[in-house]
Each structure stands twice: as structure tokens, then as C-alpha cells.
Image 1 (cartoon, rainbow over the protein chains, first blue to last red):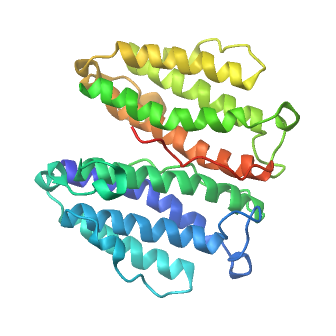
Image 2 (image 1 turned 135 degrees about the horizontal axis):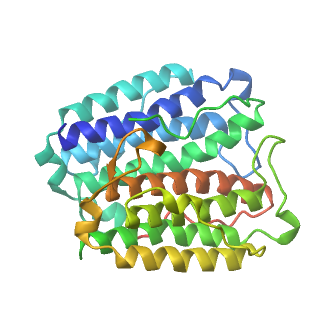
Length: 153
Length: 153
């Protein structure tokens, strides 16, 4: 398996869980927030989905411009998850091992340039972090039958 | 910088944040749980600290025996964080790039063998996941001045 393909599987081993959690958020809980200063559930889920897509697009293009892209307008979280997971998967599928090793211009965001692979790891860490919070949200919504934190890849 | 050294910095960029969150958990909140089925705060923090240490020891030794090791007896979470962070750092500092590439026998736990580097990534993902949950706990304890999810490494 190529490194690029391995990363795609690694991403999906977490994204499948993100999407499973999102599928448990009923519309009546979209505005749920654990505390007054917490992101509401809908905003948190949207932030996870949009962010990884932008990270992946930036890794592909070699610069931060994709972070300025217009975002998807879809108020149903499950549909939004499908749209962004497909778009993100398409980008990751298009990457070669050589693309992953390329240094990209992301210093304005992270203080230094990185290889695309390193930047994608940051994207992954960002998703795992927020997904960890989402587990607490979903449990607080009353769900107790929750998946492991990642699927076996 | 060697790959092993890079991994150590990567680990610390997350562990520093874990420890900062732990420092905010007052003893009156050790048994705090967001829901009845959630791990209490003290158990969650301990689980994060013990787990990474065991993952690192297993990566070093090449097999899963360290997961059976006796755990530290320390009821003060901040002291426990210091003890385990030191022990874990020592192991990571002792690893060479060659150690990281070695295939280790972890199939009983994860269904297949992995390189030590891959197993350590799993350890990292595990910490980031539970740390993401810990952010919600600490916010629910009344803290609003919280760090970023990782320090710049």
C-alpha cells in the first residue's frame, strides 16, 4: 500500500467514527452546548468537517488559499458530513507519495513550513481532538452505545 | 533532528496540554463525571497517563507485556502526571530511528503487527482523543481560559 493510500485509510478510521457520532445528533440537539462558552454541537461538527477538507485542499495545492474558500451551505449535519467526507476523500485519493513529501507554504498558520504529510497529521490531530469532545456531547444527549475512538484500519 | 527526537517533541506538544488541563482539576472535582456512564475526571486523567506510558514501554520492548505492569500509586493527579510524563519521556528519549522502524508483536491488541512508530501514533491518537474529552470536563468545572489543543512543537 502506498503511503498516500495508507493515510487515506488512517483518515477514514477516524472519520467513520466522526460521522457515526454526527448521525446520533438529532436536530433538537443542534444547538446543544455543554457550557455557555462551548461551541454548540452543530458548530463543532461543522468545524470538524470543514477544517479537514481545507487542510487537505491546502496540502494538495501547497498553500493556505483553500482556507478562504466558500464553505458548503447545508444545514443537515448528516448530509454535510457526506458532502465533506466525499470531497476530502477525493483529494486524499489524488495525492501521490511524492505530493506528501513536498514542503508546503503554511508558515502564516503554523509558524513554519511543513511537508504535506506533516500538515495532514496536524489536520488529523485536530479532528481527533474535537471528536473526543464530541463524544462527551453525544453522551450528554443521552446516547450510551458509542463506538471506539477509531475503527481498525 | 532524528525521527525519534521529532516524535518526542510531537508527544510533548500534546502532553504539555494534557498536563495543563490536569493542573486545573481541583481535588473537589476528581470524581466529577459529565454523565453517569462517563469516566470520572480522575480516572480519565489516570487512564491517559498510564496508557501512553504502557504504549511507549511496549514499543520499546517489542511486545505487550508492559500492559500488565503494576501501575503507579499516587492519588494526586498533578504528581501522577509528573511521574508518568518523566517515565514516558525517558523511554522516548532512549529510542533510535531504527527502533521506530522495528515491527513489534502487538497483534493480540490491534489485530496485526505494527512498527513501533505506528504503535506510538496509535498511542498519540488515544491521548489526543481523551484529552479532547478532558477539555469539555474542565470547561464544565468552570474554567474558561483553556490552552490550544496542542503547543507548537
